[in-house]
Image 1 (cartoon, rainbow, N blue to C red):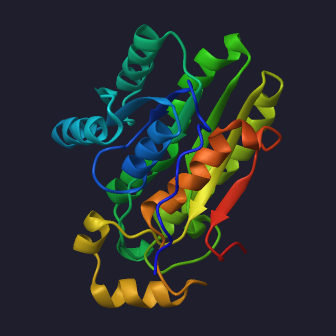
Image 2 (cartoon, rainbow, N blue to C red):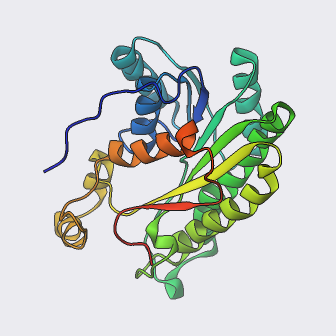
Length: 257
């Protein structure tokens, strides 16, 4: 049984916060909602324009404020630059970046094509790098900011058919640690979450009930996480409550190695 939905405590009051891959019903949308509930000024982005517009409308209904919604494919440097320019033009600064964009898939390496490998790496790892790089270019002159990346326990553990995804998420973890050292002198924190199983409607649609049940049984609580439970940890890492945390990858599960 899931715990009750948390009350807001103003953890991100006034923080201009950008969340990538925020359309749909997964961790990105849940994070945008939780950040808005905690007082942040939200900007949401996603590759899928129709779903992004629907997400923005839904957030407006829930929070009373319609966020700026900017379509962006994180595999395109030009689109990433346009996204961050839109944030700066609309709000004058960026306080928090949540890199949620990622792409999965299942294929044994012996059967995997170059296209499958590159697609997962380009969205999940390169996209995180592109957005983080652009965020730093806005944050460094101000001497403040926080970046939270969405990694995965797959970056630590082995799983059949997940070589490309595991490599990408392990790369996100390494990127987080290295950039944290580079950014610390500028007053910028860089951390990551590593969720295990967070079920949402899209995942349930593309994954068998048997597999979801098998994975849930391996969790300490015997259930999958709610997307907002992962979002809560992201909010904490973005907030001043994590002021002395940087370069950390926080497991949102019991599956840290």
